[in-house]
Image (cartoon, rainbow, N blue to C red):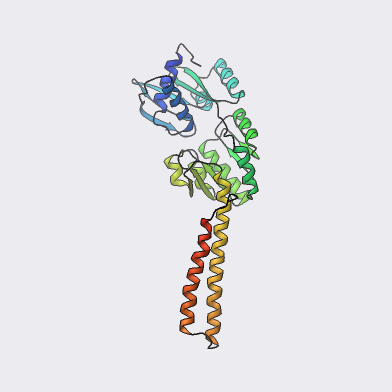
Length: 293
């Protein structure tokens, strides 16, 4: 939606220039749209990210900014008419991206999130795996967050969050639930992932910051791996407990036999090697993953 005398082509070209180096999913959507329109994308100079809000840079020597409705408001360039148009888009469940310069807002871009078809079923599987609460943290506006949360079937959602707000939210959840996993993919998620009990990054689509912060990276970017990861982690922990208990138990038996003079050196060596082999074989069972796992 171009404003103040600008054209749609100008708006899209400048948005693409500002987002050319960004790894954010919304930036990728803008760049994809610009390429589909056949526009040549020339990255903006001296681009600076504004965490949780957007970014700004120089295009042909002039400063332009791009970001959220909140950033537009902070820039002091939001008129009543622009605010009404932005709210109309947000009420439709869209994410609004504003673009402007040092004088006015050049236009608005409306981006709609499409939920993956299997997300509601994945949420059910996560609960089935024993997770008590599934909560969505997002920087999106209330209308978009509510629409996505209802469609996905999460228990709660918290919207319009900056990176520091996500960290604070995770801190409260850790104090309330003790064990909290944070799943994220962007630079805005990295601080919250570090504050969680453990972080899970979506590997292929995740930023370097998210991958470096996470404890686990799902390289396939398949959300269906989350319930599998929970179940498989528990199977692994049970396997470790079995191996330690068996190994220590058998050594305790041989210590007792030795005290009564009933154990021989060869019996002890055979038992020690046997325990090692049995522990390895028991661990190899983890490689056999059933369809339920």
